[in-house]
Length: 492
Image (tube, rainbow, N blue to C red; front, side, top):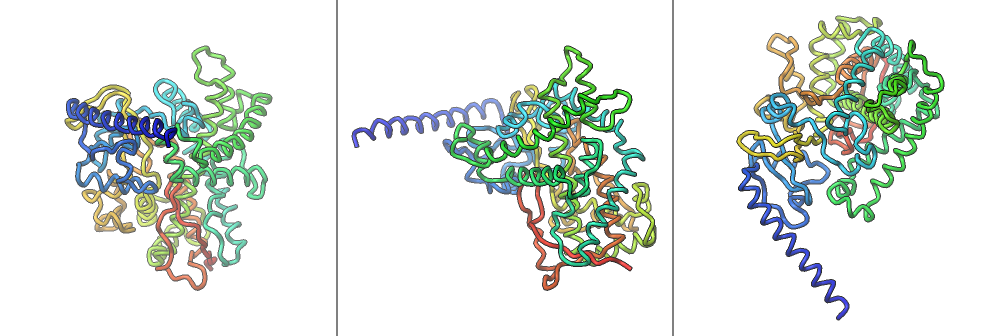
């Protein structure tokens, strides 16, 4: 007992000190006119107010009391949250240079160490992003060459689904084709769906993306000094290491066979840029690997997950699927392959794809960081403050959408059935840091979705009613549909 007392007293003093710091921080916050927010408790801050799996929904609830710009404390970290279309638009479009940096997120710092396209900042980010956009454009993204590659992959996907002969298959089978488009850009060639490298990469990406939504992973990000208590980040880093072994192999092969007049992949473009040996070049080995890893992870997850949601929602709402098929029949007939240009004559199909992206709120947010002291909406936000532009709150904003919590393609149609682009449609974010793959994803989704509905009617497995299909999200890095099966009946 006597030995325990000094430890107890030290612990008590530590808690008192933390409480005092939080109180002083509250006074400082008032003096600087920071955005308001709930009072933080010692150590945990405002974590007791959050559903750690769906932080986006909890933050929207807090905004009902504190307004569209407020402060929360995630453990020891102070975070400014922006909710609703107007606040997010003003920050990311009207003051874009202020909100373009990334904060230090422990798991991504361990993975990328500040390198790559998505979690870098300042000059490194600008140069790497600019290069990546140019490289992807030169490789045919958004051009006819890219569309031909997508149409070719569509045929492989149709063949895969036909092989189930109308029987049930896991929705995750739909990962194959969108992922192969990314792999073709990254490595310069498509993979057979049974190829060991393809299967391994798909498995690793799937496992990592799911682990990134683990409650214990979030706790590691809030309290990285307690990492020895948590397991998910260790598993993630192990799986990332396996991915990097494959990427390093392809980078090495590219260096041995590089031909500047015939760059066929993003890895080739990275290696060729590195060979220039410019002393100010950001394309050192670590950044080359990190950039390739970013494209691998982000490029395979978002479009694949959206396609799975699209098929699930067509099963859930068969009357909408019938309308999509009727439009496809009218414009394409049963056999002509879709092109991206066809979307101009297919307003309902286009509206359905947009509504899928809006409804599922695929990527609730990726934190930003202020690059300088700024005044925003009457509040002061210091340089280096983590800022969450909450995209979920934009895509579900009651002031922008008639029925935000319902799947309703009419959100994108006028009274005459014409497609209407909505300003609050921001699934790819907006401003200078919007998703670099938005153009490619838009083409891939339209061609794959239209091509699948042209060939198949998607139905729930035998014994499962449409009303029983689960549309609650499985939380990972993105909002994924729950694991379940679909049946694809070939149209005559």
